Length: 358
Image (cartoon, rainbow, N blue to C red; front, side, top):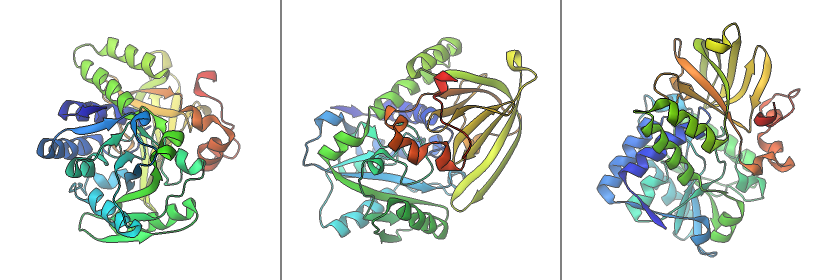
């Protein structure tokens, strides 16, 4: 067990922006809201998975919607607790521990808000080891855990409860609520025991994000060395360097969808690189050939500053480095690939090949 103070929160936000594969929400907005909450309510207790009691009541606290919306619809910080209250009212008891759904710029910080306000501990883990666009795309769902009941809330204090026996159906219903409630909402879901959380979560998410974020902070004074250390820590592979020539982006159905086109420079001069996204970067191609696909991560960095660039921040003229990062091992199983492999996103003719083997 250890405490997360302001510096840890800031480092986690930076590191999560890398692990989010372009999605997960604006890390700066999340960092500001989480930092303010920690300053007001105090440091947050972080438990390793092995430290949580088997009979503890654990819930997932997360945001859902299009990351592009967060740029204009800034979170108040109270939405996550509203959603948790809705879930607890339905269950008839209070939860002991919270954990994030994913390593996303906003979603990694989301459970910190109700945790700090209530004095609850967080678990050092998540359900993805990265960010994915849909509610059922988590390890808990792969191993049979129900997302329901689901507490839903927005920044105005509007609450609702969604309950269904199918997690994909839960995603569809929550996505509809997202559209009706302004494009971004808070959820409390996947109620489970401590034993289930230990068995089915991706371990060490906060610690990994914090380590990567600390290296990004170090990059302010030594960019090259920090880049090498980040690549080594994540087992990452450089895929491309170039200048963004075009970003086709649309917000529809509660998702930010589109494709970015990048023209190569340096040793990549003469090549064209594309990244297709649905909130997160899902498919990367060089000269029309896939070089990295979900569930492996695709991350973009500013060439000059090493700042991670999310999908909503990617724009014409950005000079970027693109890297591929191996995903959590749970996703490379047949069960995992059925949920988040290329075919799950409509790439029917693209087989999954680990990024380090391409």
